[in-house]
Length: 80
Image 1: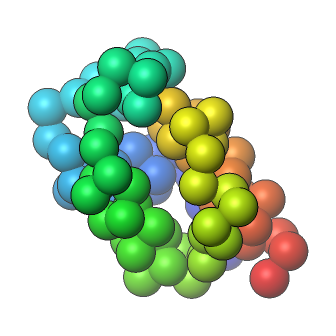
Image 2: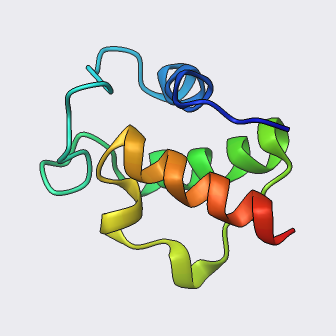
């Protein structure tokens, strides 16, 4: 399965609508996404992309931007 950045942004928009995911690189640092959003993202990634995000990967760097999250999901998808 080829996961695109647009796929990840679409998933993020289902969780938190009014965010410019293409530009924002401080989703965690600026509190745009909170811990409940992170849990929703982890669950959505599993549902939509069949990717399990392990606890050790739940760090701000992986969730601060759509690009970082896309890279994480792609990397994990390759490993599975």
